[in-house]
Image (tube, rainbow, N blue to C red; front, top):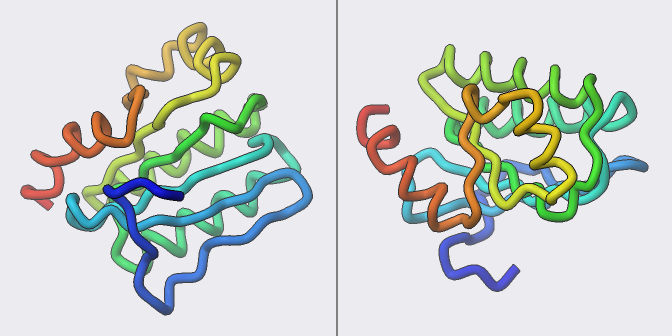
Length: 141
């Protein structure tokens, strides 16, 4: 995408792709250490959770411990999807990482607000805001 804050992640990280319900395009964030932006499109539900989990875990295993999930084109997150996001957050936190939601679709933001999920991971309006939140984290590791 034309965002100046992102670039293609280094090889051999290959987490991009799609399943029938979800597409993921990864972008490294050069202005933040160990950070990867995953631009998602589709829905996060029982049909796509394993694909999302595999992508985030592969990114973490490749050294990207701060994951930014772009959800502006994800208009549905099921309870299974929420559980997957929370499980991924736990895995990343165990590795001193983080999970941040970037530009959630209004329907998804409503679900997050109703479930008070922003107490677990931040939701930001822009990639720039998410990177600003990460700066203290990426310095500490």
